[in-house]
Image 1 (cartoon, helix red, strand yellow):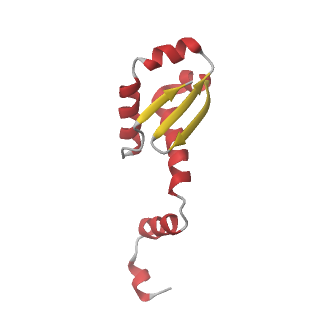
Image 2: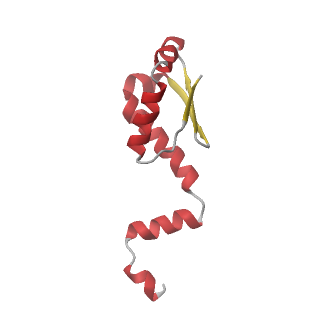
Length: 97
């Protein structure tokens, strides 16, 4: 370990590790799933069959067409809620399937 590394915090070391190993995209996908589950609640979580982040677009597959229709009216609010939970503007577009 280099002398300059001795004074780095654990969060700095972990961030360096994530950056060097190009793990951020995978972590973002995990964080988006966690944000969706916590922000949307257990009822919507139960109807969510697939969640996929591609670039800045979040694709959500729902098993209820009625729920899909209801959620489609609040896409902007959902995007804002998720981004706020994530602490960054990761999602720009929401596609409900």
